[in-house]
Structures are given as structure tokens and as C-alpha cells.
Amino acid sequence: MRNVLGSWLDGPKSAMNQAREQAGENRPAFRGEKLGLPESGPGSAAPLRKRLLAFVVDLVLAALITAAFTAPAYPGDWSLVTWLVITVVPVSFFGATPGMALTKIWVARVDAPKMVGPLRAVLRGLLTVFIIPAVIWNFDGRSWHDRISGTIVLRR
Image (cartoon, rainbow, N blue to C red; front, side, top):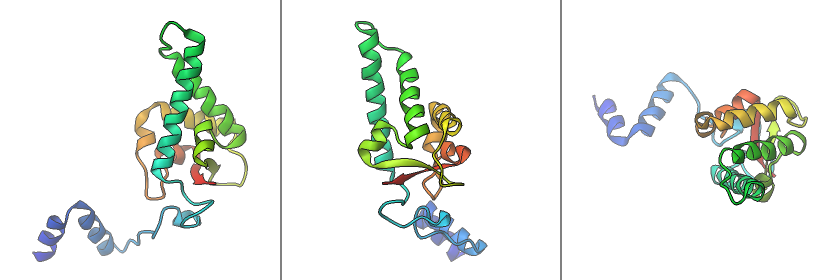
């Protein structure tokens, strides 16, 4: 009885950890450990704050570029099209958007040391448009759009 009350009083994370221990699951020590990535430094999983800052920079850049072509009217949904272009094209060929380059992070394939390529970049971009896949992460720091497209965001 004490185990049940203790885990309940300690909060949901403690209860989950206790359940994992009982099930024999070992949680990795850091993000990307299961993928063979280093704990910190270049090549390690990018932290959420850098990913979020890169995303905001890309959104602002897309809005400014679109506004330059639609002024004096508001850009409306055209900003989304511009955002897709400045996300898909650079990620396809260089592995990073302008915001990612600024925050020193990049997108890499999980299955091979090749560039991301247009198909994966388009898939990532379209799935990001649907907010839910982009805001739900696993312990390795990969969101649904990363897992579905077979990519991960790393530090430079």
C-alpha cells in the first residue's frame, strides 16, 4: 500500500519511473543515447529552446518576405507558403533553415549519413503545418514529424 501511495504522492513522473523499473525498462541517461549520439556538444540532440528559437526566426523571416510582396495588404496565408519554401529548400540541400543556421542546429537523417533530400524535407514541412506532430517529442528529442520522416535535429 505504501508503494502505491508513495508513487501517487510523489507525482506522475515518479509513478512512471517506478512503473518502468517494475517492468524492467531502462531509461536512457540522455537524449539521443539510444541513437548513439554524444551527450553534449556537436552531433548531440538539439535542445528544445534552440529548436523553438529557430522556428520563430523562420516564421518572422517568412512573414517579412511575404509582407514585402503583399504590402500594403496583410500577407495572410501566403506567409505559410513562404515558410514552407524557406524550410523545405534549405533543409533539402543544406540540412538547415535560416533560423537553424542562426541557432547552430541542423537536420540529419537517422538511417544514413546523407543529406535530408527533398522528399523528407517536404514531408517534415507538411507535417509541421499540422502543429500536433511538431510539439510531441519522445525521450530522444524527436517529434512525430522527425520520426515519420526519419530525421533528427542535432547541434552543430
